[in-house]
Amino acid sequence: MLLNALRSATAAQHASLHRDPLLAPLASGQADAAGVVRALGVFASVYAVQEPRARRGLAALSAAAADELAAFPQAPVCAWLQADGIHPSGPAVPPLPLDTLEWQVGYAYVRQGSTLGGRVMHRALQQAGVGQHFLGGYGAQTGAQWRRFLDALAGAAPRLDSEAVCAAAVAAFASFEQACVARREALALSA
Image (cartoon, rainbow, N blue to C red; front, side, top):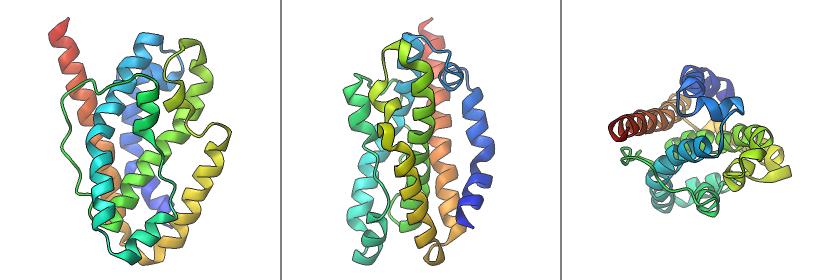
């Protein structure tokens, strides 16, 4: 099953990001307002590069591949971050080659998964008063959107190269790891 392969391929990176000094307070629900802004700035740094690439990649797909991808929810992560007043907070990460259906699906797994995790954090961090659009995601519909993603993934799986989808998801997680490292280095230089 592709979902299990994706979870397995990205498990170590996912856990590592939850332990990253910039993201750990967010992941644990212990971040103050400044910590939420720092953490979400990492997300904004990644999405500022990858979301335009994803849109261009989608436009370059064949009609059949674009139709397949249309079944997947497309979380408006940049709009949510902008609504929260969050801006990229570090150097740009290298762009992913989001020009195949497998790369699009692997990246979508990470993006859509962040909405699910964000919703859990949202409940714990409401008192911080920032990040409510991004962390709140789809609101009460977050679980339904995740199920919609899983249904689309299951439907597309027989036509996808699962190793390529997993490699794309790993690369997307690596973008977040790179953004965290760059932001920590920038903060150390400015301290």
